[in-house]
Length: 67
Image 1 (tube, rainbow, N blue to C red):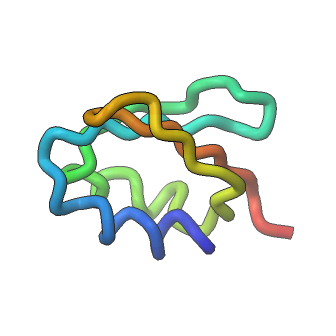
Image 2 (cartoon, rainbow, N blue to C red; image 1 turned 90 degrees about the horizontal axis):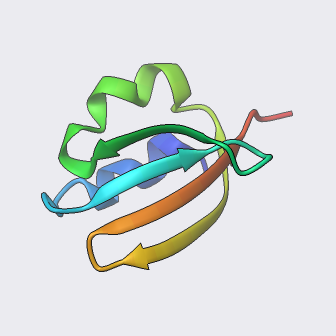
Image 3 (cartoon, rainbow, N blue to C red; image 1 turned 45 degrees about the vertical axis):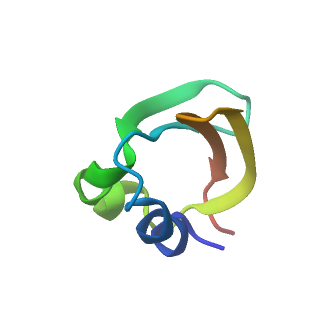
């Protein structure tokens, strides 16, 4: 699944903060789910490798470039 497929599904949760992590676990960016359009063009083609629920208002999404 690509990031551009996942983010619209999360956008309805206005209190959700999303942190994108690279393949080494380093944070790339943190943003509010409702504002996902601002990063979609740059990172939308990246493949989601895992999703971790940190709390009821925070998730980490690990991504990597598609092969």
